[in-house]
Image 1: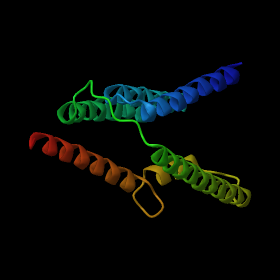
Image 2: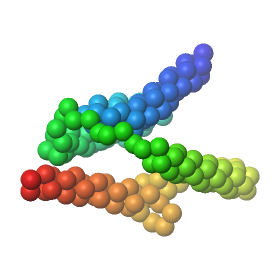
Image 3: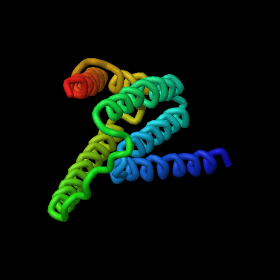
Amino acid sequence: MEQVGSIVMYLIIALAIIVFSVMAVTERRILRAATYLLFTLFAAAGIYFMLDYQFLGAVQIAVYAGGIMVLFVFAILLTHKPGEKTALLSSKKKALGAIAALLCAVVSGVAVFTQLSFATARLGENPGVDMSAIGETLMGTARSQYLLPFEAVSVLLLACIIGGIVVARKK
């Protein structure tokens, strides 16, 4: 019965991530879009907590949902009027955006299925998967490990926010 509850909770959180992500990118009011992004980040933290990654869930809430969203809101308030609405996109831009989104979805799907088949082939060779090896791959800094790119993206994000604040102060 516990498995059924976990699956139902996962589906609810996944649906919340999908719905709030779509709402964040389709909302014309920028502060509401930032709020929907905040809900998406909280739901992602919920996934971490379901996987028993309490530290990553807490970091997700503290750093991204807390700190980064505060910086986003300050950057929005410094650069735009909160009630200002953006203009509607022309049909040409909508079509280009839909084509780009479809292309990204196809590329992501191919990448996921390629990695799935690669992982399945490796599991067939070595059925004893070591959890510490998986953790080292996700959090290590060596080749084919993901901590360094993750930190580089967060530094780039911080630089973009600081740049937005500098541009807003020059007005």
